[in-house]
Image (cartoon, rainbow, N blue to C red; front, side, top):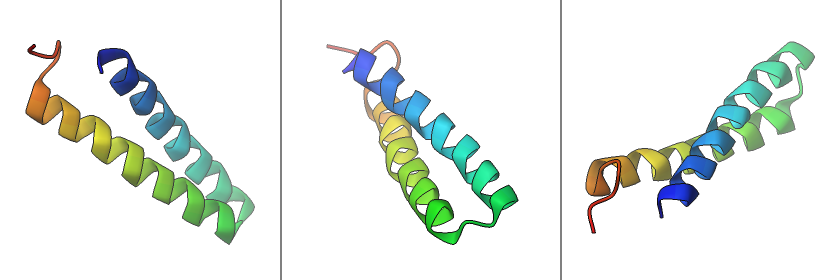
Length: 58
């Protein structure tokens, strides 16, 4: 779960970068998908950190 959390965190960061680029290009569909990905993956990462800690307790 530790490596998966790091990967999902990187995906959330890249989704935020994609959202900024989509705002520059004024692409509405891209903004929606990037915000959705950032919320889902970022929320999962934060929830995993809160409930399991880093490094995770076994």
